[in-house]
Image (cartoon, rainbow, N blue to C red; front, side, top):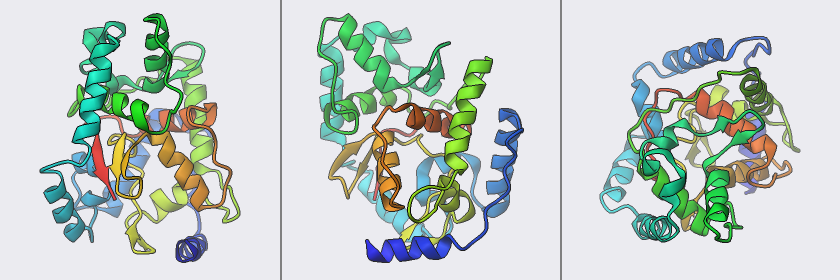
Length: 273
């Protein structure tokens, strides 16, 4: 941990990229893609769905990852998610029984940002079942992984078709670029400016494609975890307050990051080190 914190502190000395708070989401999307295209010209757009394994310098790790994915470590958990989905008739609450639907999450319903986790729990309540309490791992991660597997390969398509949706997006944008914690770091410090660099033996992932592979099985966790579990871990790494999963802030961040991944294929569930 000390080595990680020291490395983060060193990276923090590098200046921030300018970000326009008045830019429209469509302009943000264009500029974000162009930035990574220039930063990693050899990386094809769709490859960003594979996280660090798409980046230059990660060839050995990719070979190891591809070998692991021949027999994914999350298969047993995915089967548990499928069983829970069937037994609780969760498909009845989603269009087409949930097939292809995950590519539209999260979304603005006119009042708030809705995520798969929130809608799964609402479905359980409608079916007279107890909602899932742990929103980071276990049953919730397994069920979300199964639902997303029904949309595997489908391109992300997030629409910001109302002022409320745009306002929520801008809250996520503000969170993404704001510095916080004792190390005074933002999400962008690691995943935009320093994407692809090594830190404490690990490669910093590119922000483009964040979330499309979650829930993910991480060796560190020893199981599947949701995207908001990963957000909490990132905040802990920079000694910032970790917010509750499905908090308004994390949902806004998820909306912002997912919109910027529009067009990328979903790869969840996935495996990450």
